[in-house]
Length: 543
Ligand SMILES: C[S@@+](CC[C@H](N)C(=O)[O-])C[C@H]1O[C@@H](n2cnc3c(N)ncnc32)[C@H](O)[C@@H]1O
Image (cartoon, rainbow, N blue to C red; front, top):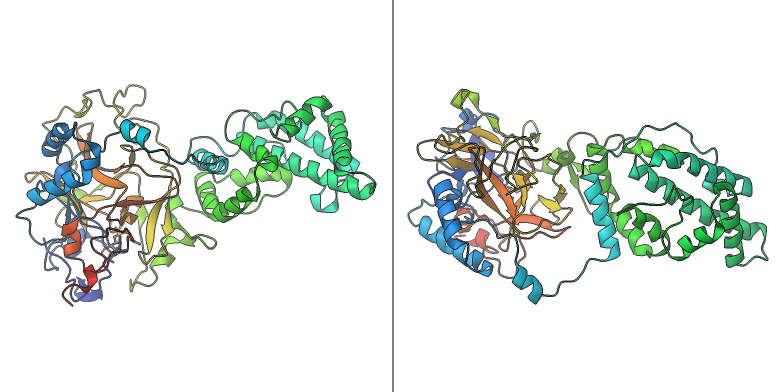
């Protein structure tokens, strides 16, 4: 294998030399039994593996030696009792020893064992800041958006014939209460609808109080509130005391017993009306574009729900959830626009796929990842039965991505604003040891000069190339203090590379360690910003 000429910063493509921004290629993981792997590059304009097979000078590959089935298993088992805190040092040692004779290629950090799930002793020793109610509320929203729940529901199109802006007379308030009561039956089938109605009712209730004070300037706020309560109760058929108690308890401004919020998450919205301060509104406003990207792409019909309050609007974000890059300062950007600085003749093109695609020109109908020596029904780690059928699967090593009903991983592509271009942000926490996703790409062989992940064995090698297609793992950046690692795992006798959490908090960037071997060949400064960053001046070496 050969690599791009990093010194020149050029890559040969179709007989031409193209500027080679080091973030443009896919990945290469070596199969030699060594650990680590090389990072990807931002959309190198190579479209077919054959194009790049002969044109580069030196290999750029990422190795996951510790992830090799036999070796990693052995190491993993042998290390099971080692104190978790030693992870990095141990991995580093293994990396050094396993790569002692490795050529000077760009390799990622090798991880030789799965992170242990729990660190009970440490958890007890280190008191952690508990998430605030607002954090929990926002987390609840992200969880719901990424869960299998349906965020759309068919319901009769009865829009309110009034607007809050026109003021809330007694008559209008009565109509609003009846509308809410009508919808409450519908809302049973959709929490989202329930939430919208409840928050709408609270808004109307507050507006009615304001109107009463204008109509009766002599009324105090408390008196106006009591009048509004009475009016609501007369339409809703609910005891005034109960409604008042609920509001006073800060529960929510529910309009009827039927509208009462059940369970988690949604109750917070109304509680927020009374219990949360402006912090929630500010946070939600800030997060709105990111939430809209997820909701629009994962639940295209969700905006229909807003019809009940006459606030539905056109869908803003279409396509795959990761075809949008969320930014701190405004609406999300189309992914390809964030690579417009690269001189790509046809622009940035990346196809998102759920599973690896096998290069049939190379492997025919064979899956090179399959190890014929393994029992395809048995998990190599837990020794339980593995099956793609969730009801008969017993292996729960990575219950969120294998043998389950798969939900979208709660992550988004975001603009890093620190010079790394894009990265991946976790919207929900990932417990240590939990899989975040499989490293998905084109299963091929013979790619030179581009970053690919190498897999298999010396007898049955293959590469996972993410240059043209794959999933969000292609956008994961390096950190000298990473919160994730790549691991090899066998599912139904087929080798997979997965991104495993070392403990990822909601809102943090997902990172892996690309390894010394990778950075040795990369003439660029690391921008991870960690106090112990090992490659902060890498780009200046040899200048
Ligand atoms: C797999 S890509 C990661 C996604 C990439 N940031 C993008 O926007 O497409 C790897 C490339 O990202 C950049 N990168 C990743 N981590 C970095 C870091 N800590 N410091 C500087 N550049 C980094 C490097 O250019 C690297 O070759």
